Length: 60
Image 1 (cartoon, rainbow, N blue to C red):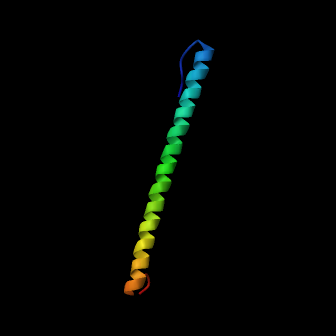
Image 2: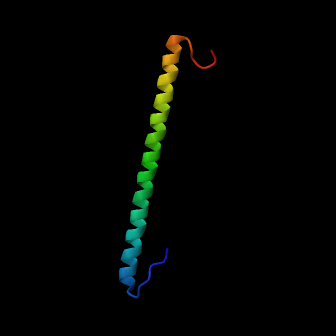
């Protein structure tokens, strides 16, 4: 993405701020994705364990 301007110091500050904001957003999205994956794994494990006690586990 281009940033237009003639003041190099201001451009530097603007570009760095944008990079930091993008990095923060990426980290947040990665953390949210990891949280969803862990919740899905926990749910699957809970169902598999419940199936062991009922005798209807995977492969029965």
